[in-house]
Amino acid sequence: MSSKYFVQKRRIVVTWLFAILLGALVLISESHWDVNNLLVGEVLLLVGLVLLGVATVGHLWCSLHISGYKKSTLITLGPYSICCSPLYFFSLLGGIGIGFCSETVTIALLIAAGFSLYYPFVIRAEEKNLRRRHGDVFDEYAAKPLRSWPSFSQLVEPEEYTVKPKVFRRAVFDAMVFVWIAGTLGLVEALHTQHVIRPLLQLY
Image 1 (tube, rainbow, N blue to C red):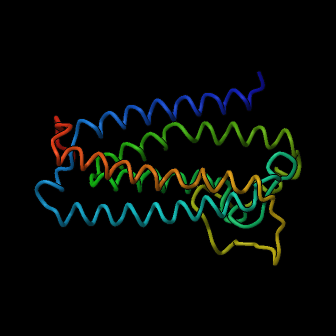
Image 2 (cartoon, helix red, strand yellow):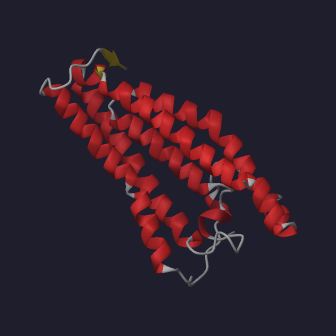
């Protein structure tokens, strides 16, 4: 088993386990703000939806540039010119957005903490594979002052770009997962309101 395949498989397993635990927490809890201060709850929901919108657009932007080229070419244009790991950055925004869509700060902080603790290892492993595959080209790219936080002053975009529609279409469905999860949170809130599921605790 290649190191890349192992890292990807482990990342999927860890992400699913974390998502299941968070899902269970959401099912047995309700928002303190939704019960005691509706305005705060609605503000958190709005912030979450804004972050989800940015994350979805960001995922599509990244996918536009890497779809069909990721395995053969080191992509350094578009979002990859402003950030070393833009896909993970937008995933982090989406995760935090999902947390806020639960109308709690607690879930958002748990997602941010889990992401910050685990994904740096994933990113370093992927950079190791990129260095092995692209050699000096990647070293030159990595030497630039790029970090996890995007710097739009370094944005470089071509006038035209060839996209492989079949690959990009799959990426569109992947990006929609944020919207689907937000809808599921709304369903869970309705189940709580209708007393189908009785929450055991309140989260701030």
